Image 1 (tube, rainbow, N blue to C red):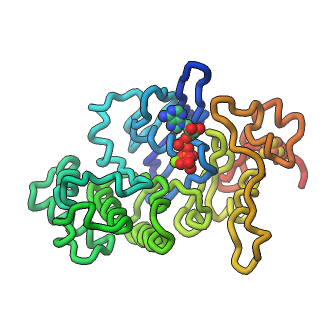
Image 2 (cartoon, rainbow, N blue to C red; image 1 turned 90 degrees about the vertical axis):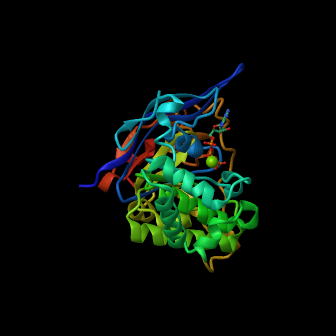
Image 3 (cartoon, rainbow, N blue to C red; image 1 turned 135 degrees about the vertical axis):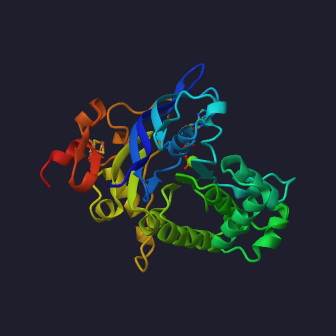
Length: 323
Ligand SMILES: Nc1ncnc2c1ncn2[C@@H]1O[C@H](COP(=O)(O)OP(=O)(O)OP(=O)(O)O)[C@@H](O)[C@H]1O
Ligand code: SF4
Ligand SMILES: [Mg+2]
């Protein structure tokens, strides 16, 4: 039986303000088991990054976190920065959207990689260099020894993202969190990085929380998927189940936004209506202002989850109605 590596329970992230409190994450539960890839999808502002940041105890002030996040059994919520230092980049590594900002421009790739490795693993300098070279080889950077002496400005965005992936993996994390790791790259490079991640998943048995807007990437990379809307998970399950039979009206609409080959422009849909202001999330089901199946009950009360086969579940009042 696979062990849970990342366990999120009742997670809430709020940013109190003078006139309103932004409720970025509103009570989510999510488990990523060892050796699996969980895709976290949803529109901009739905709370994906705040979930990822909470997993590493990185919510910026004045953010407040409630609930529980456990990485390999270690509770993250409520810890001080000093207690979280071994976790960040060690047990849990993160790859960010903009690789250019993630490396320090004043140090070489080699200095930064060996520092990170030695910070988390009991390696001497020689062993750290060896591990860095092996990691750079695994992400297919040509001439790893030469790459170690480079400064970030001497590399392309795609090469730097490969370095970031290598650096994250070299520290042997229990879980890797990738927050839209290809968004800042051009389309061809995006495809190359996704293909690299797919290869690493297939060959290295990695546990990954993969955040993306792109359902196509979820289909090709992930085992399970969680769909977020307005700080909540509205549907979750295996990729096979959710893609074959999306239950929640929001998931169904999200699926319709994926362009299909040869289907023509009419299928390039977007979801009508505005993403809610998380200072004032809608009452009841948060999706009701945009849902064409909404009725009075939807505006009045929040739906519970209904469970289908194999942990496939969705929260919608209309699911218990006969098809
Ligand atoms: N420092 C902050 N102060 C106040 N509100 C914040 C802060 N950071 C994020 N938020 C709000 O929290 C909500 C969730 O943001 P988050 O960054 O998690 O969205 P996301 O799903 O990652 O979106 P995107 O796809 O655009 O990256 C948004 O409404 C955002 O405006
Ligand atoms: S609960 Fe109502 S508003 Fe929400 S998704 Fe279901 S039908 Fe639509
Ligand atoms: Mg984000």
